[in-house]
Length: 117
Length: 111
Image 1 (tube, rainbow over the protein chains, first blue to last red):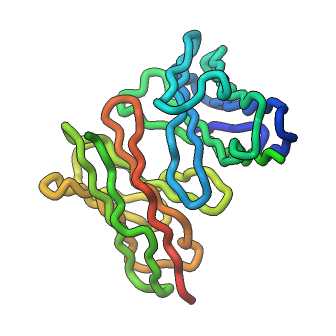
Image 2: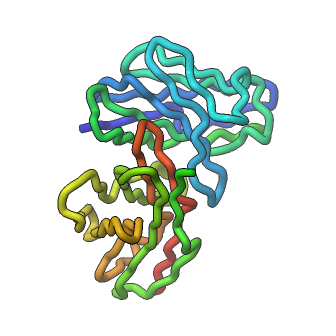
Image 3: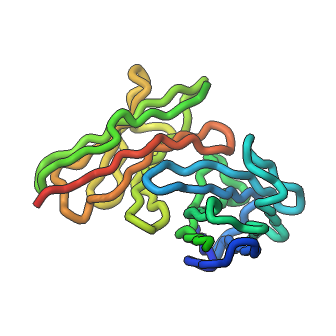
Protein backbone atom coordinates (compact mmCIF):
# COMPACT_ATOMS: atom_id res chain seq x y z
CA UNK A 1 0.00 0.00 0.00
CA UNK A 2 0.81 3.74 -0.03
CA UNK A 3 2.16 3.85 -3.57
CA UNK A 4 2.92 7.12 -5.31
CA UNK A 5 3.56 7.30 -9.03
CA UNK A 6 5.07 10.01 -11.18
CA UNK A 7 4.73 10.57 -14.88
CA UNK A 8 6.81 10.88 -16.91
CA UNK A 9 9.87 9.26 -15.41
CA UNK A 10 12.10 11.10 -17.86
CA UNK A 11 11.49 14.08 -20.10
CA UNK A 12 13.69 16.01 -22.47
CA UNK A 13 12.44 19.32 -23.77
CA UNK A 14 13.68 22.35 -25.64
CA UNK A 15 14.44 25.60 -23.89
CA UNK A 16 11.38 27.83 -23.69
CA UNK A 17 8.81 25.07 -23.64
CA UNK A 18 6.66 24.00 -20.70
CA UNK A 19 6.66 20.59 -19.09
CA UNK A 20 4.03 19.04 -16.87
CA UNK A 21 4.84 16.36 -14.29
CA UNK A 22 2.07 14.35 -12.64
CA UNK A 23 2.12 12.91 -9.15
CA UNK A 24 -0.55 10.39 -8.21
CA UNK A 25 -1.32 8.54 -5.02
CA UNK A 26 -2.49 5.18 -6.30
CA UNK A 27 -4.08 3.52 -3.29
CA UNK A 28 -4.77 6.34 -0.86
CA UNK A 29 -6.03 9.88 -0.75
CA UNK A 30 -3.66 12.69 0.05
CA UNK A 31 -4.71 16.04 1.39
CA UNK A 32 -1.17 17.27 1.09
CA UNK A 33 1.44 16.60 -1.54
CA UNK A 34 4.98 17.91 -1.68
CA UNK A 35 7.32 18.73 -4.52
CA UNK A 36 11.07 18.42 -4.13
CA UNK A 37 13.98 19.17 -6.36
CA UNK A 38 17.24 17.29 -6.16
CA UNK A 39 20.48 18.37 -7.78
CA UNK A 40 23.16 15.77 -8.50
CA UNK A 41 24.79 14.42 -5.37
CA UNK A 42 22.72 16.67 -3.16
CA UNK A 43 19.83 16.27 -0.78
CA UNK A 44 16.19 16.95 -1.53
CA UNK A 45 15.09 20.55 -1.49
CA UNK A 46 11.43 21.23 -0.75
CA UNK A 47 9.97 23.46 -3.42
CA UNK A 48 6.33 23.67 -2.42
CA UNK A 49 3.50 22.15 -0.45
CA UNK A 50 0.33 21.47 -2.33
CA UNK A 51 -3.06 21.14 -0.66
CA UNK A 52 -6.10 19.83 -2.46
CA UNK A 53 -8.38 22.61 -3.59
CA UNK A 54 -6.17 25.48 -2.51
CA UNK A 55 -3.13 27.36 -3.65
CA UNK A 56 0.27 25.82 -3.13
CA UNK A 57 2.66 27.17 -0.54
CA UNK A 58 6.07 27.83 -2.02
CA UNK A 59 9.36 27.79 -0.18
CA UNK A 60 11.46 30.89 -0.11
CA UNK A 61 13.34 31.44 -3.33
CA UNK A 62 11.10 29.24 -5.48
CA UNK A 63 9.49 31.13 -8.35
CA UNK A 64 5.73 30.63 -8.26
CA UNK A 65 5.27 31.67 -11.87
CA UNK A 66 7.92 29.26 -13.11
CA UNK A 67 6.81 26.24 -11.12
CA UNK A 68 3.03 26.04 -11.31
CA UNK A 69 1.43 23.54 -8.98
CA UNK A 70 -2.12 22.29 -9.17
CA UNK A 71 -3.69 19.86 -6.71
CA UNK A 72 -7.06 19.28 -8.28
CA UNK A 73 -8.03 16.10 -6.49
CA UNK A 74 -7.09 14.02 -3.46
CA UNK A 75 -5.00 11.74 -5.65
CA UNK A 76 -3.36 14.04 -8.18
CA UNK A 77 -0.97 16.96 -8.07
CA UNK A 78 0.81 18.42 -11.07
CA UNK A 79 3.96 20.48 -11.39
CA UNK A 80 4.36 22.52 -14.56
CA UNK A 81 7.75 23.97 -15.31
CA UNK A 82 6.99 26.95 -17.51
CA UNK A 83 9.40 28.36 -20.10
CA UNK A 84 11.98 25.83 -19.07
CA UNK A 85 15.67 26.64 -19.30
CA UNK A 86 18.74 24.44 -18.95
CA UNK A 87 19.17 25.49 -15.32
CA UNK A 88 15.79 23.89 -14.58
CA UNK A 89 17.24 20.50 -15.47
CA UNK A 90 17.01 18.43 -12.34
CA UNK A 91 15.43 15.45 -10.63
CA UNK A 92 11.95 16.26 -9.35
CA UNK A 93 10.38 14.09 -6.65
CA UNK A 94 6.89 14.30 -5.25
CA UNK A 95 5.52 12.87 -2.03
CA UNK A 96 2.10 12.51 -0.47
CA UNK A 97 0.80 12.63 3.08
CA UNK A 98 -2.25 10.36 3.45
CA UNK A 99 -5.54 11.75 4.69
CA UNK A 100 -5.87 11.01 8.37
CA UNK A 101 -2.18 10.36 8.90
CA UNK A 102 -1.10 11.21 12.42
CA UNK A 103 2.62 10.79 11.97
CA UNK A 104 3.10 13.06 8.96
CA UNK A 105 4.81 10.26 7.09
CA UNK A 106 5.31 11.09 3.45
CA UNK A 107 5.29 8.50 0.68
CA UNK A 108 7.59 9.29 -2.19
CA UNK A 109 7.25 8.91 -5.91
CA UNK A 110 10.04 7.46 -8.06
CA UNK A 111 11.06 10.86 -9.41
CA UNK A 112 11.13 12.58 -12.81
CA UNK A 113 14.37 13.43 -14.55
CA UNK A 114 13.96 16.68 -16.51
CA UNK A 115 16.56 17.64 -19.07
CA UNK A 116 16.20 21.00 -20.81
CA UNK A 117 18.24 21.41 -23.96
CA UNK B 1 16.47 26.32 13.97
CA UNK B 2 15.43 22.79 13.15
CA UNK B 3 18.06 20.75 11.39
CA UNK B 4 19.23 17.26 10.59
CA UNK B 5 22.95 16.60 10.34
CA UNK B 6 24.65 13.68 8.69
CA UNK B 7 28.31 14.27 9.53
CA UNK B 8 29.71 11.77 7.05
CA UNK B 9 29.40 12.74 3.39
CA UNK B 10 31.12 9.58 2.18
CA UNK B 11 31.71 6.25 3.85
CA UNK B 12 33.56 3.29 2.38
CA UNK B 13 33.33 -0.17 3.89
CA UNK B 14 34.33 -3.63 2.78
CA UNK B 15 31.65 -6.14 1.95
CA UNK B 16 30.78 -8.11 5.04
CA UNK B 17 31.91 -5.38 7.41
CA UNK B 18 29.58 -3.65 9.82
CA UNK B 19 28.15 -0.22 9.09
CA UNK B 20 27.00 2.74 11.10
CA UNK B 21 25.67 5.93 9.53
CA UNK B 22 25.27 8.87 11.84
CA UNK B 23 22.31 11.21 12.09
CA UNK B 24 21.82 14.01 14.59
CA UNK B 25 18.82 16.27 14.82
CA UNK B 26 18.04 19.61 16.36
CA UNK B 27 14.38 20.03 17.14
CA UNK B 28 12.12 21.66 19.68
CA UNK B 29 10.57 18.35 20.61
CA UNK B 30 11.20 14.75 19.67
CA UNK B 31 10.47 14.51 15.98
CA UNK B 32 9.41 11.53 13.95
CA UNK B 33 12.55 10.12 12.38
CA UNK B 34 13.15 8.29 9.12
CA UNK B 35 15.95 6.69 7.15
CA UNK B 36 15.70 6.44 3.37
CA UNK B 37 17.96 4.92 0.75
CA UNK B 38 18.31 6.18 -2.79
CA UNK B 39 20.02 4.37 -5.65
CA UNK B 40 21.28 6.46 -8.58
CA UNK B 41 18.43 7.86 -10.64
CA UNK B 42 15.82 6.37 -8.35
CA UNK B 43 13.38 7.68 -5.81
CA UNK B 44 13.55 7.22 -2.06
CA UNK B 45 12.94 3.90 -0.38
CA UNK B 46 11.99 3.89 3.28
CA UNK B 47 14.32 1.74 5.38
CA UNK B 48 12.78 2.36 8.77
CA UNK B 49 11.03 4.92 10.93
CA UNK B 50 10.67 5.90 14.55
CA UNK B 51 7.55 7.42 16.00
CA UNK B 52 7.62 6.38 19.65
CA UNK B 53 8.14 3.37 21.91
CA UNK B 54 11.03 0.98 21.56
CA UNK B 55 14.12 3.00 20.74
CA UNK B 56 15.68 0.22 18.65
CA UNK B 57 13.90 0.06 15.35
CA UNK B 58 14.18 -2.76 12.84
CA UNK B 59 13.86 -2.03 9.16
CA UNK B 60 14.13 -3.69 5.81
CA UNK B 61 17.25 -5.20 4.25
CA UNK B 62 18.73 -6.01 7.65
CA UNK B 63 19.02 -2.40 8.80
CA UNK B 64 18.27 -1.14 12.27
CA UNK B 65 18.47 2.25 13.96
CA UNK B 66 18.62 3.37 17.54
CA UNK B 67 16.98 6.52 18.82
CA UNK B 68 18.95 8.19 21.60
CA UNK B 69 17.16 11.16 23.04
CA UNK B 70 20.10 12.24 25.20
CA UNK B 71 22.32 12.48 22.15
CA UNK B 72 19.66 13.69 19.72
CA UNK B 73 20.76 10.91 17.43
CA UNK B 74 19.18 8.28 15.23
CA UNK B 75 22.08 6.25 13.83
CA UNK B 76 21.57 3.58 11.21
CA UNK B 77 23.37 0.26 11.52
CA UNK B 78 23.84 -2.96 9.63
CA UNK B 79 25.95 -5.85 10.94
CA UNK B 80 27.16 -7.08 7.55
CA UNK B 81 27.11 -4.91 4.45
CA UNK B 82 26.36 -6.32 1.00
CA UNK B 83 27.62 -4.87 -2.27
CA UNK B 84 24.04 -3.99 -3.16
CA UNK B 85 23.87 -1.62 -0.20
CA UNK B 86 26.00 0.92 -2.07
CA UNK B 87 23.74 3.96 -2.39
CA UNK B 88 22.91 7.33 -0.89
CA UNK B 89 21.31 7.34 2.56
CA UNK B 90 19.17 10.14 3.90
CA UNK B 91 18.01 10.77 7.43
CA UNK B 92 14.86 12.86 7.82
CA UNK B 93 12.89 14.38 10.68
CA UNK B 94 9.28 15.45 10.78
CA UNK B 95 7.48 17.26 13.55
CA UNK B 96 4.81 19.17 11.78
CA UNK B 97 4.00 18.38 8.20
CA UNK B 98 7.33 19.14 6.57
CA UNK B 99 10.32 16.89 6.38
CA UNK B 100 13.79 18.14 7.18
CA UNK B 101 16.37 16.09 5.33
CA UNK B 102 19.99 15.58 6.14
CA UNK B 103 22.56 16.17 3.43
CA UNK B 104 22.98 12.47 2.83
CA UNK B 105 25.77 9.92 3.19
CA UNK B 106 27.10 8.15 0.14
CA UNK B 107 28.06 4.56 0.89
CA UNK B 108 30.64 2.77 -1.17
CA UNK B 109 31.14 -0.96 -0.69
CA UNK B 110 34.44 -2.59 -1.57
CA UNK B 111 34.41 -6.16 -2.83
